[in-house]
Amino acid sequence: MLRVWGAQPAGRGARKDPVAIRLALKPTVSTALTVGPATGPYGGTASLTATLSPAVSGRTISFTLTGTAAGTAVTDETGVASIPAASLSGIACGTYSDGVGASFEAADSFSGSSGTASLTVRPRDITVTADEKSKVYGDTDPALTYRITSGFLVGGDAFYGSPVR
Image (cartoon, helix red, strand yellow):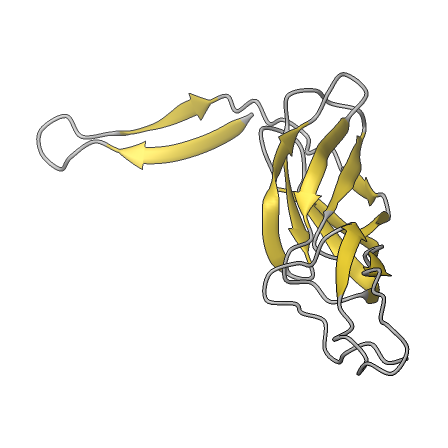
């Protein structure tokens, strides 16, 4: 119990009386956020996951990829939040030790928490096939060309050079 002493306004019959105030304090529950590593192809997507402990459903988790916002997800009954296809657009190939970030802001009686995990962006698989050409003996060589037969280039990426015999 907290006791507060106050006084009535000065004047006739002024007196000091104790005022009792009851406060119900909720203890703060500490949380931890475990972030899963993510992997995906250059220009593709990766699955992001984070687990809030203790497991609490209906809580919003914010995700980042290399420091840039990647979206939010809500925890399920096991405390897991996931974004199944977060865009890796604009992230170069390589491994980033803290490339995936997740955070939970304090809410109700739960403390905020955050965590990081590695992000690996793999090279994109692309198959390039030389176009079939022919020539008659003695003629000059035809121009050699090629085309992409599986996969695709991303954004402003391009092949450079020309095939040689």
